[in-house]
Image 1 (cartoon, rainbow, N blue to C red):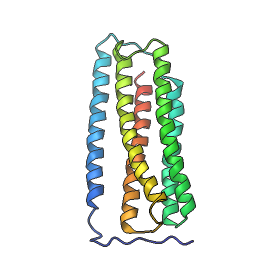
Image 2 (cartoon, rainbow, N blue to C red):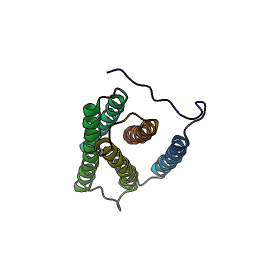
Image 3 (tube, one colour):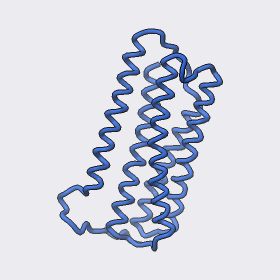
Image 4 (cartoon, helix red, strand yellow):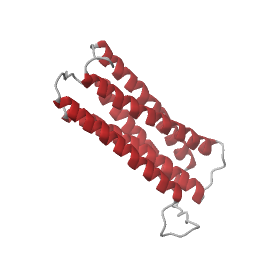
Length: 193
């Protein structure tokens, strides 16, 4: 089928207010993680810092969340192309991979704990726990958003409307953001070692 363009019923030169709000939220999250990254660097130079190997499950979880982000993109693309089955299938895949990401993060924390790195011990381990747990809370928020997207996909009649397109765009933007944020965190931890 041909891709159908969904027109904005309002002014084309203005950003949608919900997207603007989401962008503001993303900027505040970037600032929060930048602050934590700065604190990590400052504390690292203060001494009493134990270097340790990142758990292998963190690398597995990277692949999982990238795959989830790909599924969100494919779902959005299928929606625009009016391919209902693909749209629904990829949305389910994104949700499942999002859940798998949380499981792999938990397994990564268990790997850290079993190697003697706990939350109360050396500051290096504490920072990794705090920053990754904070990220998982944002992924959980994304899973709530994906649950709403699944409701729209499976319960509401399939229609290409401007309102549904905006909802799907908001879901995609947030989910891609948490994906990029995880990649940043992993690279940050690797480069600080």
